[in-house]
Length: 75
Image 1 (tube, one colour):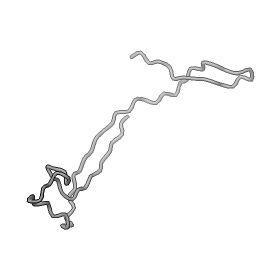
Image 2 (image 1 turned 90 degrees about the vertical axis):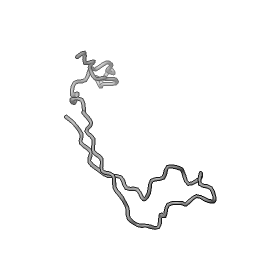
Image 3 (image 1 turned 45 degrees about the horizontal axis):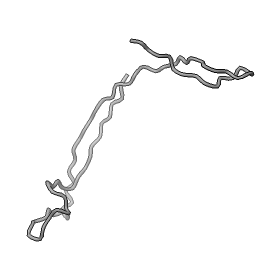
Image 4 (image 1 turned 135 degrees about the vertical axis):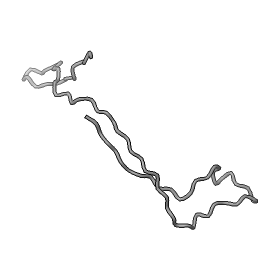
């Protein structure tokens, strides 16, 4: 079982330096250009199989479950 994610991220421009590191004589990129660029990405996350079993560790006097946990899988 796996989860597949397909999406994109958009950006206006990419700079080597941050905008706070520019000095007076540096030509800054023109961000008024509305040509938005996209970087597509996709990745797959492998999911473990679902665990439907529970180990009941503690019950109260009425028989209600107070504490349970998933069994330890030793594969």
